Image (cartoon, rainbow, N blue to C red; front, side, top):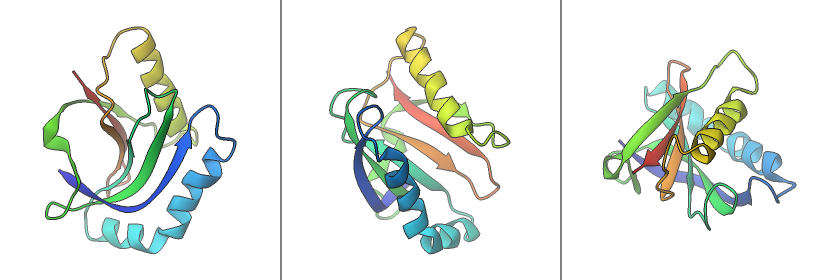
Length: 133
């Protein structure tokens, strides 16, 4: 699968006090595009890339759409570990990221840190997918 960028923001999980506003604005400002993509049966992704170091450093977050022709993020480049998000939990995405960080700290996964993504499927399923060695 490949993804092309719709819109992006630079942020940090721990030092950016406006992180939630930035990410929410990406979704709100591009809602019409995202709705159209999902109605077409394609996947929407929130891609994390341009990592300064690891999940503790600065990075870019990009709202993306599935695009096999012009996609700049090509998932065939790496091995992946997928984490299913509990969509009935309003903090499901945040809780899943915390699980991923815990798995990394406990050496259960070894991340690549090129790009990772939250995958939003047309049927409502959400997964967070991280590149691993």
